[in-house]
Every structure is written in C-alpha cells, then in structure tokens.
Image (cartoon, rainbow, N blue to C red; front, side):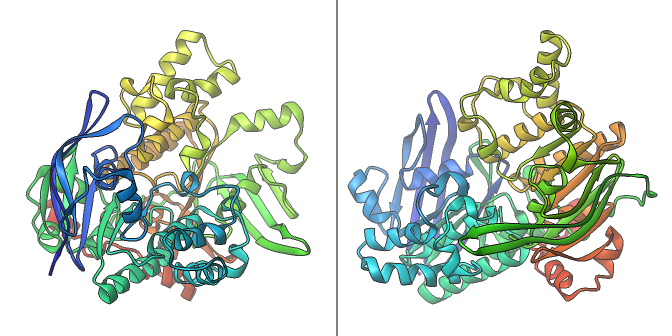
Length: 531
C-alpha cells in the first residue's frame, strides 16, 4: 500500500498567532483518516495548508508536505492548480461561500471537468447531471438549471461533494463534508465515498467534529487540540480505550441515542399554533414546488418542538412561515393568540423582538463588516435596551454564555471558525431575551464539546426564562436530547408527530425508522468512556 500524503512537523501561523504547531500525519492509498477536535483546534487550517489554500494572513512557517512522494509545500501556484481538483479533491466546509451565486449549479459542476480537460462543453453538461445524481441530488436535471440560493444547505453541500469527486482524485480532503446533511443523505454520501475508496484506491483525509461519523468511517483517528495532535491510532482502539483526557471528554460529550431523555414535562398553553399551513414556490415559468403541505404543529410555552426530516423536506420553510418571514399560501399561524399574517408596522416590530431566529449558516447571516461586539449588540441598539454601558456588559455576558472569551469582541466573522461564527449567531439571537427562538440547525457546525455546552445553555435558559424553542435539525441524537415533542417531515408533509419518547421508542412510519437507523456513532460506548 503506497503512501499518498506525508505531512511532517507542519507549522502554520496567522500573523503572530500560531494555529498549527508541529503536526505530522500520513494517509495511505485506500485509507480513511479522520482528524477530530474542537472548533479552532487547527483541523481545517491543517487541511488548507496541505494544498496551499490558507486564507488571509495564514502562512506555513515550517515543515514539509509530500503528495504521492513529491514535495508540494514549496510548489508553484501553477503546479498546485494542476493538482487541485484533478488529483486532490477538496470538499470545503461552507457551501454558501464556495459556490458562485450567479452561475447555475450544472455549469459549476461541469467547469471542473472542462478545466482539467476531461470533457467538452457539451459532454460536461451531461456528466454534470450524472455527478449530481451520484451525489444524491433529487431532480438533477432541474437542479442543474438552478442557482445555489435555490437549493437547501444540504443540497448545496452535496453539490460540493460532487464537484470534489468529479475528476476521480487520488486524495480527497473532506472538510466537514456532511455537517449540513441529514442522516440518510449523510449515510448515502459516505457510502458513496467508501465505494470510491474501494473502487479506485483513493485516500480520504476527513476533517470533522462529528465523532459519530469518524467512528463509523475512519480507519485511523487523529485528535487535535490547540494546534497539536494529542492522540492518534486505530479508530477501534481509541474508541475502546482513549488515553488522553481531551479525547475522553470529546467522546463523553458526543450525543447518542443511548443518552437519557429529558424528564417528561406536562403540556402548557400554546405560544405558536400552525394550522393546515401550505407554502408553494414558483421555480420557473409554469413550474411550482409545494414546499409545505397542510402542516399543523404547536409550540407550547416553555417547551421545545423539534422538526426533523431530510434536507429539502420543508423543515426550514415551515419555520420561516411560522414566524412571518415567508408568506403562507394557505392556512393559519397564530403567535400568542394573534394571527401573524395580519401584523403590520409597530405590531410586526413587536413580534420581531419576541421571536428570534438562529440560521443554519452563520457566515451568510453575519455582517462581514461588523465586529463580533457590534453584531451581538446590534439587537440591543436597535431596540434601545438599557444604557450604552449596560449593552456592552450584556454583550460580554452573552459571549461568555456561548463559550467565547472577550478577545473575540474585536474580531470579524472572517476571522472565526465555522463553530465560532455559529456561537456568535446564537448569542445575538438571545440578546433580547425573546419568548420564542427558532433554531435552524443551530449546532450542526459545532464540535461535540461546544455542542454539548450550547444544548445545556439552551436548556438552562429555557428553564430560567420559560423560553419556547422551534428546533430544526437533521441530527436525531441531538433532537432526542432537547425535545419535548417531535414532528417528522417528508416531502413537505408531517408524517409523524408526538412526544419524544413515543417517536424514538415506538416510531410508526417506516420513514422515521429509516432516519433512526441512519444515525452515525453507534460504536461509541459511553459507559466504557465514563469507566
């Protein structure tokens, strides 16, 4: 088995700040190596340094990188251009910033084939349809004519995976490749990656905060903390007998179906009632899409309703309609007894203070020109809450609650990792102490330890302030941990609805059982870790 990638004593800095401090790793042909660790641990920086794609002031200060026996850390940009895409594929972490918003999806997939001379203009378009199909995209002929903003977050991520695999590279660097995907599509994509490895002997360097995915898919694990490797070894050995305290803490924090349900809480009066709501979009001349079909759910005061389902099932659309960010086609939505669709002017502004949302993609929802302090304080300024000093104090308190120190106040979104940006978005949503928070995949970008902290924070705030949550997620292990009631959506329709114990322990629908069966990480033995 030949060595595809050999990294020795790699060091990377951003300005004067050391991000990677002497990392050494190898990946052999046909091997899957997963790099895990908290957000900001240096995982993605290591991956980007390998192929010369460090952002901003990032630069390699030491070490060597060899690909297929040839040194590439000192290679010219022309040489790297020939390698990237054709021989080393990259699945970037953020699909919103990686896809061109003014170019159709099919053309973006076809471009990589044309650039590397693997297809003509005509054949590349046909190949793009095939690649989108392999990546799990529904209606690939239609999607190929759409733009990135017309697709869900999970669908955009699948497009990036298709682009990365298009040229059949020898090495695939996958930087959080499934963080935006529901569990069934996640399994399909990872099964596809496994098949490609078996078929071509390709190697995979998997960067992930999802220990379940790493446990199920990787031959070896590399655990990083603060820019250094603290533990490495065969996956089964580390899961069964972790040596480093940091590794033990990561495994203990990973959500699973074996975790305890939250204690049963009696029903309260509804704060949000969605009745027979439908939403239809026009996606072309004479073409419509029924995103939500006659959906009815209730969010009780001080309780959590989670909506789960595959990417594109209508979860996020239902949430946006429920709080008046999308106009409903038919049906009724009442917030605290008031019809949302009829609100105007000051009444609508009052609703905006009482209802906040955390979006799935924090980078797209944070103003890149503002500092973290300005972003989090913005709602307080807009509603003139307290004095200037009190707003500043509240901002610092919010950052502390989401595990960000005061040093982040002056940073901008581009200077944060994906997980750090998500924490800023959560802090901003909590600033006004709203009655209802819509959480659209709020922890999908977070590593397990911070994810655990955020979920605990959300539970504490709910208990303290009687907050109500409408929780949108594809992570059923997280949903099981935080929910009181669960609605399962498929193709715009709610197919199962009930208490969390009822849904998880006695699912009626085959679709729900498929979702549960696809959850990764069943090989993580929590009892063994605690012991």
